[in-house]
Length: 330
Image 1: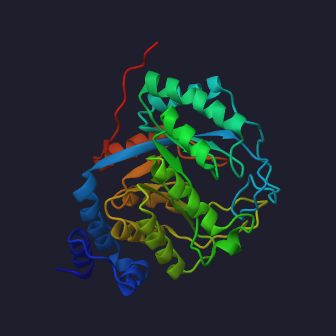
Image 2: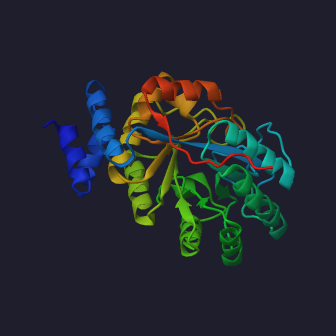
């Protein structure tokens, strides 16, 4: 049994990667990359077969965020020329859900910029949730920033299935990325939604000048948080942000990161998220041998791949879209 297959078998047997094994994954020689990816696939296949979950984002409020996150075009310190608008109304949010339904998406992600939602903004989201679930049968993931306990309870009562709040980077690297909130603020929000019985979604952004040890620490932190869904974003550096011009990634390293996430969080939904098109490029299909979930359509302020290309990619791989929807009801 080869080294990488041995690691995969250990993971399936319930053993955790050592720090050396984790670093070896990130340092995998390129000529062994296909063996590594295939080994990650054995773990992915054990839990998910060849099924792929599709997710779609709607950016319901853009820009005007008081936070100073160095990667974000919507932050208070960004000069990026993005579209800015206040919270969409109920009808616009529902219209986006109709598009998601047409694309065979299983989870519809309602995202809004800002430190956290006002009660009015929260009510606008809540007003749309019930109708979306009843009419389209979509799972709803909300991503609205830091929450108060009563707000989390309202989202649960409204029927929100999942809440996304990324740790983004390691605890050690956090202050290099933002100082307007703490790493603990992010962790506490994830713990809060878990207390309400909402499925936790928390992930990372790779390529923000972190070390490989930071990447390993992120994967382990998400295991401790017990995030059900782990979005792995790859930095798409935007002009006008502090990280503009940053270009540390190549497709092969991105694949190694996805394999590491699978080995450390073997049973979890690993989602290839923002930046996959510009960082994985022609190797995007290989990413799905480690991950089992992708976004279709556009992201927050950057364009994604044509949804028809995503569907074609899945068909070419012989993978199956994993979704449960109900027929549209008038």
